[in-house]
Length: 436
Ligand SMILES: NC(=O)N[C@@H](CC(=O)O)C(=O)O
Ligand SMILES: [Zn+2]
Ligand SMILES: [Zn+2]
Image (cartoon, rainbow, N blue to C red; front, side, top):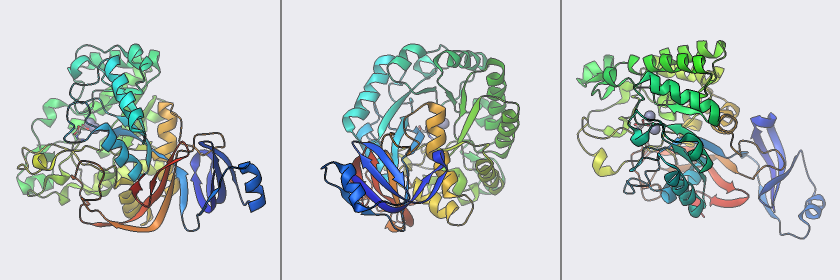
């Protein structure tokens, strides 16, 4: 049994945001109360050994749930695999991750869904929930067997990495989403508008002489998908929202009652296109980093609930690929191990976002939208949780990263505020930044 004493509990699912004592037993939250005596705790332990943790100055919250991670298995295990990715997840404070389907082969049938799920179970770190593709071979033409894949454990469907160019295919997918009850996650990017652009089109791309991707490449598909969700009543989730216009469109659709949720990635909340350097591909990501104004609109959207969730879009790549010239390097930022700390340091500490809102957006909302366990510390729920130390500093050292990827903009930098203990179903899987 675990006894966490005088820890500041942040649990927006129960509107708790104050110091409490917490007991964990048999993999579940047993009790949360204002204070407990040793005699009371021993009685509840019923002979079981009690590990006591002094929680003063630290936060305890439900484990983060990341609805957008690329784990690259099967097929690209040189970038990441399910074991390394799910270890990186718990190191970063994530107890559940949804694995994107753009692997090799893509996850477009039940056998592959079951493979990803079983690999996650075998690894035994964060819960790994497979996302299936929407279309066979991710070709954007023929829908997969969604009901069958749901039986096999799919938590959602997405052709992420690629837009579904046919509006009719997207419409049908949303019709089916009503039957499965699972969201369709849309990677909104009009292929023709995006062209072979390398960064957001704007003042910065002009100055650098790099081919630009207009903001409309995202927003026109956001508009399309919102209209289709409204017409069909299907469950829509919009991945990696990055433009002011998208935020606006979502805000208006929500006011009309459209069944939509949307996520924003930490890198779009923290960086902007002015910071991109031709000699460093680490900030080359899709969708591309927007302008300062976009970044403000995204923060505002997250604050007012237009954007429901934060998700990493952890996109691991090898150093060899990222070392290629800007035009040839792949898009993506690896972020599972640094994302929470980066959000803490860049947004919570300066007062742009409250920690309560961050936990709501990164744990409570994902659990609700995708119908997952977790996202709460209510007594009886699985003890998927994070002890966060705001005073813990760490240099992001490649030797310490457990992800296979090194494509993070924080390499060599010092970050402050880290998850220092992480439990999955009451089992301690990370302590003092070391995965157990
Ligand atoms: N985000 C990225 O820049 N890359 C993702 C694909 C995606 O999320 O669209 C990847 O798979 O590498
Ligand atoms: Zn995408
Ligand atoms: Zn992605």
